[in-house]
Length: 442
Image 1 (cartoon, rainbow, N blue to C red):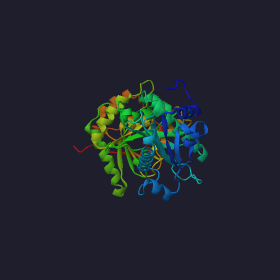
Image 2: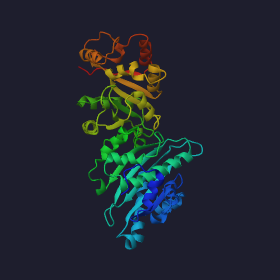
Image 3: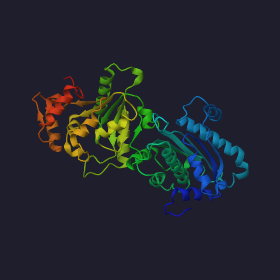
Image 4: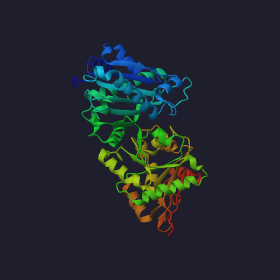
């Protein structure tokens, strides 16, 4: 076992090469063979590398791994792992099976093309044994490459791949240690890991969904998604080109009204004439960030309790690293240019106009609001009773907001901030960026 001190990528690859019990293959499609190259160049590669292959041609790839799946997909990654693992067992189990902890590493990625027009992402995984002759275990990752050039994306994939192979053998003492190991020697912002899935006895004490939450809390992912049906999907597959309704909240107490608000906003979006085949999808939106300055961020069990409580109400759950709605707009618009609707209560709408939330922006409130209200974004604001809203205004320290006398309910068009923000607020209501939802029928 290597010492607990930090090893750089070179020494991680060399440590694995010098371990006579670790032996396996590398199959990489897209962005070169950067993972295998680390093991081949640090020395001692014959002790670890059984084979390195790069099936770039589609016909060759289909012949090896089967046709009928997208080339950058989880299905293709799993087909690659299955093929490479079976070949290892067929060719080497008799001669080396009693002494080797076999592994099969694979990735299939779409790095930046020459024109810079593609989505730069991919799938990476490893199947491995913890002991000779044992049962195989899997780790699967979905990654987004954020570097601006193909060579830099190739480089970071190589670093991540070495970290992954090293981690499954030497950094499994806890999920925190494992996740930290994945990002070692990779500068912040170069890569996102927005899905991780695990299988096998090596991880039987780990909660799979807790790993997703930790990706966000650690900053490895900007957001993850818990679909309603429980499948493990990256945000790109959930959001890609789809209209989206997001219902943000703290959800300290989950009530049926939350599900009704999400459903009503989905109906409102469908009524705009959108083809049914194109969506929309509805997601409750949580944040792993502290609700406000001075408060503690929610821990993993608390966030998972919210996920469990919200999913039966009729929507998946979107968990983001940042709490401000304009940051959610920017993230979701990476994957869709279709309609985005926020379903919010009046307290959330009021919070949008509070300057304190934009102190880090050069343009303060005006910049934050302009980022939120992209052309495809509308905020559907649900009414509250007068008494409930007055109580929330005091809690929010929202001075200067005026309520028109409308009886027992207040809608977004009967509410306004103090000047000069009142002019911007009135413009957003008049142009439909803020949609005042009506109170329930009595």
